[in-house]
Image 1 (tube, helix red, strand yellow):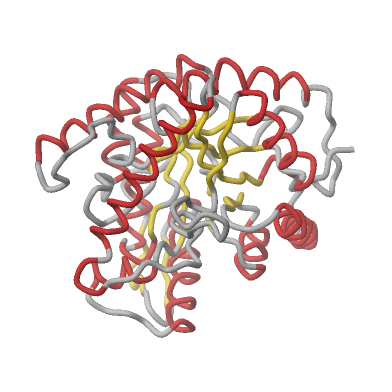
Image 2: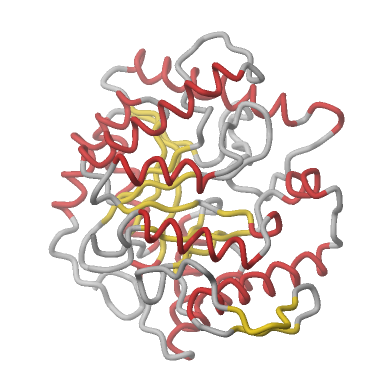
Length: 364
């Protein structure tokens, strides 16, 4: 049950899961509670399958819009924790602006206790327009940035210290406070979702891990170097094992199978976008999870597709060119997740098993 960032010499695969986008139903009402219940049941069952297939971790995204049945990832992970025994569980990410820091820290501690020390906390700012709609307020960009950094710092203090007091611009804790449910892991692994240099440097200063989605391999490689250098400057030994890069994967044995699976996923994503953008709302194109490809506006920027051999070569390129040792992938059917685990993961693990990781995070 080693942490995801442990054992830097190993290549690790984390399967993320957007509950609702994995539906196999051709026609459905996103507001139907029975449909929603089926999506939740499917996720809990998938947690057991992911462990059986050998994925190193399973994360859940947080969204607050129709067709994404994951506004409460911690509740979903609590159900997954009692269905599994070894796979690491995490959020990708907890949308910090929607959570009070004390509550976020307590729930993280509870999940670590419930999972016997297998929880990893992913934190991020989320989609600005989404959390603005949920909170009824939209902070100016610089103010929102300061509030996010302050909340992240306070969550960390609550997870790692006792009798915490805090006097910030946005949050204050006047009475010395120790959270009620302290994590088993010391420290609890934290992953920060983001792509800006500012976010990379902030994570490195605390020795936190990072999740990246949008961007080219060259951009990821530059960010990894910035992150590792900043970590070294603050006394942290970091490498490509502390960085995961996300990709959506449509995989099949034949072109017809790949196309059918890609079309089904694109349709589910299109429904999400359509439902979300009702009443004049717009999704931010700076959010890698929803940014669309410039080559094909029907597909997300993060999507890769092909046979197992083609997926292997695509992901090997990411590993070679960025120095990452952690891949955050999402297949959108059990069949694809099984095929990926059986045909892609063993090959990439074997190819990269003898690789040593240099201090720069780039394979030596």
